[in-house]
Image (tube, rainbow, N blue to C red):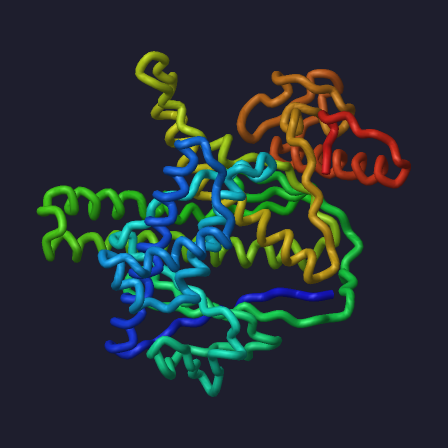
Length: 399
């Protein structure tokens, strides 16, 4: 099977190279914003989103305009790839299955820019912790912590705060993997517990945002007192960006460790098909119809997003595919209210956040473990129906 993998390292450009990288990122960011404004204008006028080919033709026309002559200083492949990303973002937005948000404008002050170099073997070169990049960048050092295996297809350079990173996307073929384990487990994602398995294993959450919330609030209050876009305002903005980066890195690192542990020990992982974007929607409502319990819902939304449920699922899926395992997503309906022992379903079964007592048979168990066992049972039902060719009621679980 063909595996695509990314190797990410810290980049160490010189001051001149960093200046050139910022220039390339600025051109790419401008093309994204200008292309986004153009596609929105077409949508508002009743037209369809232009294809990537049409957007590339627009780029050629933009370069000929006097007020956009600075785009000639950018690298054409970077600009084309940015328009390709824009087109993909719109496709994801209109895909009903994905239900992704519409693309938004990028700000320079966000401190998160990226450019992609394609046709790596033709225009780039890799040698002894250095990479040779086109467009006047030359050889750039990077902190290579492991060997880059496979055929490098492209490289993406990203700026996060004050640091630069490079990610090499590689492809290589391996024999069809066979998972060393034969076990099947249900996984219940939550807030008080990041993940609870049907075998009783519990992974506590790291809550990186919650741990840094007080410090983040102090930094943001200091920012509000400074003159916007002044030198001190920019310094304070960089401090906030650095803290946000640390929060995200802490969450991602912990999720990598958790998903690796689960993936290594279980061949089949059954999870709930949760729509995180719907679960974390604001309850503020409108002026005519204001929402209720807005503050409580806001806190719940923040806690949900702090766990990284979507990232948890994404990592499990690709790690299972590499190891020859499988992730099965089932309908989450009534998994927290159903008794894993007798099947009785009632809202009153769940006495509290952590306590489950069945009103029919008296079965007592931790509510998260009970939910994980119901998820596992729904996964068994889905697989049984697939084998027998039967149809599956939507409430029991679907692929």
